[in-house]
Length: 216
Ligand SMILES: [Zn+2]
Image 1 (spheres, rainbow, N blue to C red):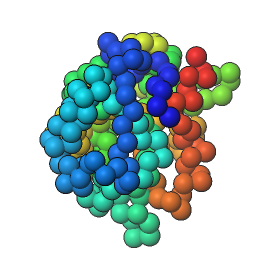
Image 2 (spheres, protein in one colour):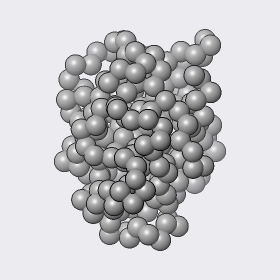
Image 3 (cartoon, rainbow, N blue to C red):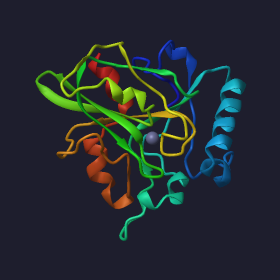
């Protein structure tokens, strides 16, 4: 899928500013070394964007990635978790994140493990009497400061900012955006990556965020 098609999440952008990027195991362009090093990764993304004449690179739903092999956070004793369940939006740090649809703050947390989300916000939404959630990971710490559970966030409001590698779990700056049907009781956190064995459950519970446009 090469066409970006839902409400722009990054402040000050239009759909024409976005370009799809592939970060899967099969992408020969990107060395494992670059994937592991936030600064190299950021340089790669900046070059990619400038070559394309765009400002935001997005993608990654159900992408199988080597990026997670560096962190024990993703290795359980049973299965390797390396299939990505959200969409990432790669750009410069500190960009504002816009709320795509009216919601309230469900929960928020600084998930500080190496390779984890860092500061994270989960919003709760109701659509035609059904409830679902959107998760925003790799934010700045300041994004959490003025938040309260139940706080209303209006569609289009800038409610968070994209964090730098020092706070975001040690990644090149990007927003992790994920749609979740059942949060399974979690607060401020939900798996953003799963193993092949878990995929059939997670792809139902975390549908493709690009389908989000159907809610508009
Ligand atoms: Zn992600």
